[in-house]
Length: 83
Image (cartoon, rainbow, N blue to C red; front, side, top):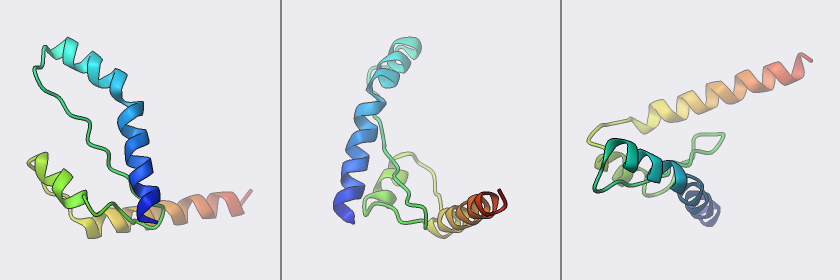
């Protein structure tokens, strides 16, 4: 499972390289970083989640993220079953 999350993180880093370059040019940045946050449908996150969020200088409580993921998964399930 952890390997899948690491692969998804690498995919996101690659996916957003062009966006990163455009932002760097537009805002004339000297340094920019793509920080992938991979969240599973049930709220699972990478072991690096706390480090990545810490680099942003903000706090996101993992419990809130998990609750949001579960509620959204349930909403999607209800929508699919009501079709």
